[in-house]
Amino acid sequence: MINDMLLLIIEKVVSELEIGRLAGEVAVEEGVDVFGDGGENVDGVAAGEIKIKERVIRFCPQRKEYLASPIDMSDTKWAEAADKYHEAEKLVFDEEPKEITGKCKLINEKILYLNTPVFSDPSTLIAEWIELLRPRRVDWLTLLEKFKERNSGLYLKMAELVLNEESFQENIHDYSKLIDTHYKDSRLEDAERVLKKMTDKGIEPDILTSIILVHMYNTINNLERAQESFDSLKIQGFQSDTKVYNSLVMAYIKAGKPDVAENLIKDMETRDIKPIRDMLMALLRSFSERGKAVRAQSTSTSMILAGYQPDLEYYTSLVGAYGPSDPEHAREILNKMRKAGIKPDDKCTANMMGGYEKKNCLDKALNLLLELEKDGFEPGFETYSVLVDWLAHLQLVDECEELQRKITENGDVPPLKVHVSLCAMYSKEGDKKKAPQALGVVEGKKDLLGADEFERIIDGLIAGGLTSDAERILKVMEAQGFPASQRLKVSLMGSAFLPRRSKAKLYF
Image (cartoon, rainbow, N blue to C red; front, side, top):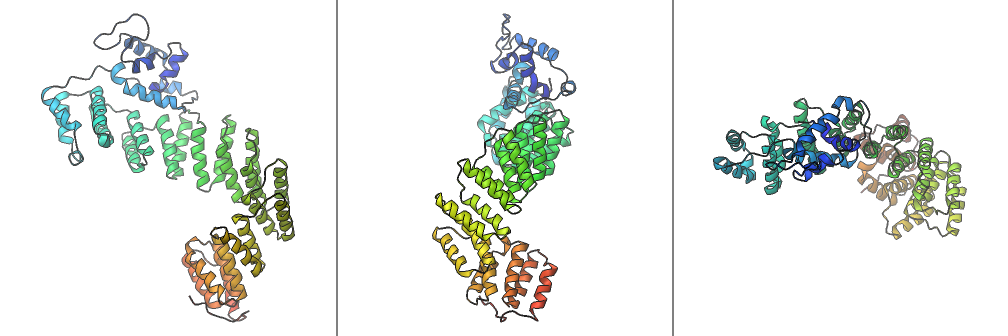
């Protein structure tokens, strides 16, 4: 029987050799003489089928020779072609299934109507069926097809079970189809079990199986195995397409590894494979969130060269990337955006405010807000949150509270960053009423706090002379797995001797 790799490429090869659609048509047309040479059907088998075998063997190169030149089999038509050929094996390459009669027919019916309790150990029925029928692959395929029609819930278990039967003559496509089905139905443990069974038998993943594994391992964030499968595709000569690259790129971005994702996109570009817009935008956002302006700019250039027009999301990400390190350049980007007729939204404006906050350019921030408001812009949740954080650093209590009211009046819930800012601000003020309330809120969200947030809270408590609470929060911080910096330890030790305010204890 022709191996699975050849089955996948038959349709393309015969088309190039002008015997066009013949093999595919025979596979689906139930033995019609597609060659048009007047052959008659004999016992339900087309006379032309013999010619298919001869021409396929004659014109299809051996697998290792074919793979010497890279091929692109990413299109879904190849998977569909593989299914057609394997489903039609009994029509083209095998004899008709054996007639089932007598006792064997009774056993066959029992197998078809297996229920869950009985299926736990169907070996006796299967063994008896094998002994009576002496099945070949075509008989197994016929049984599985009927079993799927009558008991689809147990079909996959039966399909996996028959892989162990020598007479079934399993091939790699049998495994890959099961793996793919389990993966698409989110049964990843089952998919890995079938994969292990395949490799334990010495069957290495082919191109189609490796593509499935790339997608599957990306889904479960197992990037090491996903990369292995991706590298296997290259070794086999496969020219990975946009879908395969996109799956791996998005997985690396999700895992917080945009640098690796960027290298994959560069690899795509060297192969003249156009990255999709969503892929590039995801990478741009990732660099923006990390403040990597140069890498963000490189990604934005790739987008332009790929023919994608800048939009609001594009400009917002660039402003966010440049804001922390170069707010002036970020402002130039924002101005360019406005000239292009794209109005900054709340997120974009918040990114710009965050950039000005890093450089403490309050006057420029206020001027920009006034300028945007003339164009009809109204600050929202994102912008107000940045401003609360900024004004809290400046200990402008009344202004902070006013902005906080605007956030809640709009029905928004203040983010954790705002609660941390208010806690630090009230603690520095030594406010015995508001400080305990704010501290209670952030302590209730301790699992979401990072090292920087903990240190800011503790610094505020120390500044307000609330040493006991500072020591307690330090223990909470360390229990969360964040070791205190030497600076913080020294500051806490010094506060015991030089308290700035009364050492009031916060009670809850």
